[in-house]
Image (cartoon, rainbow over all chains, first blue to last red; front, side, top):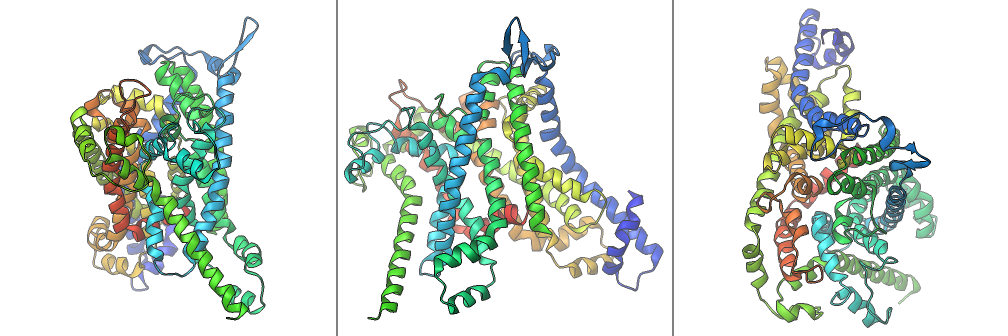
Length: 324
Length: 280
């Protein structure tokens, strides 16, 4: 650690002031950097234990025939869990139609729900950014869906969407939009819409709050100028506001996208085993726990991990653009 | 009334219309859950928009028909332990990452950010093996351990951004007086960090309280479950006879504390969320 003295010296020089002499300064810096590592090491050990090691083990399991009831006897079998050609047929996750169905469902769900969240999030943020009486009340109300546990919101909406006694069917029939009750969580054509509906309800607040934070940092003078020039507010929104908040919006979108790609609990509870909504996380857990096939399930988890890792790299790239 | 006045009035009406729509849309499902939880028997299967009965039978039966009190206790214990542990590791690490310049700091920060993006299912089999090896399967300690994967990176990240923004002069004075880094953290920074600690602690609490995948996979018996798993697994005589009254009562019980926390600390929560995402 002592080698880091030279790089930290300029910073410390300003911190210590001119009074301190050179040997003292480097001594102080050295103890400081050493203390910093002392403080970091416990956190890093915990992180390595809960994240690093289990991840490496999962990747290792994906190359074995491990079984849940007896993980110790796992044998290395190469890429067979991913893809294997055996007696004229392809096997493995990558050859499994159910896996690709789960990939399709996950991507479809992520794109649709995140797009809707962007639109609704923008609307809510613009409303919250306007000045009116009771604004903090609205902000509190908007936070409620965010705070409700996902499992609870899945249950609440599951009840509201009940095909016989649900209030959603009742409302829609009163308005006259539908003529007979719909089976929201059972009908193959509707399940995905139901899931998206609940997810949008639950996560729009998050999007709205991030957009609102960006809106509140905008300079007021360009709005003055456009008002003086008599430009229509809608045009101002698309020509001034949107470009200015785009970096923050991008970060929020990628954040949400990463969350949507790993979705598990909402769909698991709302539509249980429906083939039309099964996602990558549910598929992987099903293989791991329900079918006890740890090797195969780990291969699916590993694939999901690398997809999310790719998106994380994107996020960090965009995040950096904003930072500097 | 001039045209300009009329336009402004219409704008105001439109704004308030949107406000009402947003409030109703956000609050209605929770309102309807409360309303349903107060109905029993055949009343439950009639759609009502306004409360007319105040029957607390579901609240009694949810505690009688399953170990729901135990589940609540489990959730409270796990969430508090997770908050305390992540704040302890988070504050010390945030001091190092936010206040000291050293080589490898940027890489560490990026690693921590990366871990917070981990899909939980990606560590599921490795974590399962580890928890069984430590003999913590179907044990709350196992859950507390596993939950650190999502609360710790987040806590470190947000506390680092807060720590970085604290004035430098305070620390300089303490260093001049010969204070050690530990004294600086506990005596100088901690009093200033309270708001940040409350914010991150709250967010970590909510995350741990709501977690489902690990709690579902790493516990086996009813007595060891946390509330989200207990609610997800409430079932009736058959798949088509779910006890909706009980489910709604249980849902309201676990949500009310969160809603109260959100209403009290809404400013803090908003600042914590934006610090975690936008600034990062």
